[in-house]
Length: 100
Length: 186
Ligand SMILES: [Zn+2]
Image (cartoon, rainbow over all chains, first blue to last red; front, top):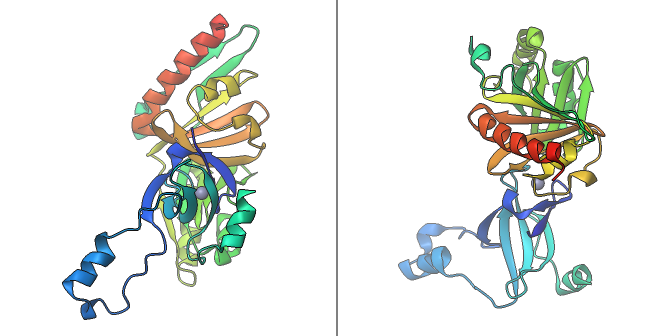
């Protein structure tokens, strides 16, 4: 079973306490009514779906209940790091450090 | 009288072989879910009349009152039934100055004590994380088989499970099966 570190509980917890919640860092348009249908579609449905490093949201549903962000490799399924919701996307240097 | 109908009343699993194990329903208490701005937790502790744990996963026990910090703004409180009203009154007073929510969930859950040198072994049968690495005096919400529980490590070999009434029988059944294996030494 995968162990995921919850940045709020500051502990490694089993995967089955968590739920996946899609790609992270997707900002809602500041003025939604200004968007045309195509742009709105892109915002709602189009995701990057990368092969490799993926920034994603998780929720510690059966733990502290909090949403947080994680960096996971979609090929190896390895988590590089997790961080609290609202924090900026970690830089490449920070990721390198977390991976080592 | 809801208490008299709780599904585990009077039931006990006892293994008295090389590895003694005792599993029983604990005396009923009043339970609350407290949600409050963590910056105001000191005010809540005053109303509660006992300290509230400051770190997620920590537990405080004082004067028979148990408090577990489950999340950044969430505490699970278990108190003797006789103190329920006093605590509700104290928090109602606090509400005038500090907005929060205190929800009575007394009848939603059942406490199960798992005690003995084989306690960890019995729990391991259905809990996926390393219980051995859980320090005494901590607690957390987790999954027991398929049921959500709150697990508190009260002593080196004494644990307390808080589980929803409707899942209690399922959890009990698994503990029963695990203890039979322990009794047989398999
Ligand atoms: Zn958590």
